[in-house]
Image 1 (cartoon, helix red, strand yellow):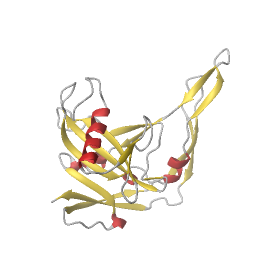
Image 2 (cartoon, rainbow, N blue to C red):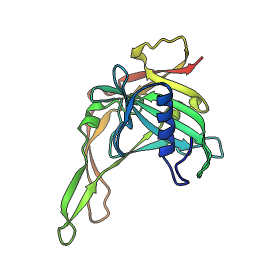
Image 3 (spheres, rainbow, N blue to C red):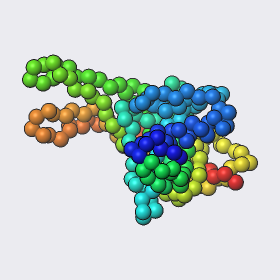
Image 4 (cartoon, rainbow, N blue to C red):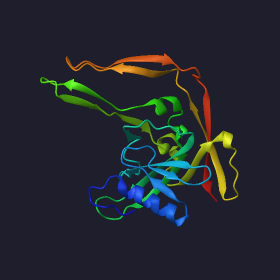
Amino acid sequence: MQPRSSSDKEYFAQDWFADRLREAGLPFQQQGRNSYPDYWVNVDPVEGYEVKSLGLNPNGQPARTTIDFNSSIPSGRKENRNIFLVFFVYEGSGASPRAVHSVSVAHADLINCDHAVADEHINVAIRKFGSYGDGFIRNRKMYVFPHPIAIDPTGLGRQRLIVPVEWRLSDRRLRKVHTLIRTVAPDYVDSFTIRMRDRGVADVARRAYANAREEHRFDVFEMI
């Protein structure tokens, strides 16, 4: 992967992925910054791909166990289309080429299967802010989730595809490695309030998930 500059932290991974799509002859549209997903790929049916990457630490582990999503909540469905998370771990830094160390292409339900909250999410502006009332708060949030290799640690140094068990994926080029199980939490964040003064912590209101404790299973594959 070739960075655009020494400070490039995301475009080199997107560029590398776009080159792979071109090599495969797959037509695609790249969305704007802070849109989810990064790419719509025009197969039948259309699929979405969100690209994330982290460097490899000297200890041989990804730099973090989490990845950030600016302004959009990720999930495995958007506009009634499946979304995949393409996660790279790379070696190298600066403006030099960065070698791909690990690749995990995972259906995004692996990190969040609450499609409703993702679909209804909006970014709002709170106006009449400040002492003169002519400022505003740009309320764009960042969402942090574990990346696929944090959930599937044996995928480090491998190239893997992770899809829902219900798909019953079968292809002679793929070998099933194992199955991952994710369990729906007891409740979800319905709303939160942050006070502008007194440096208070957020007041969080939670509601019970109707499908709490439901298990979601994902098959993990590698190329043969």
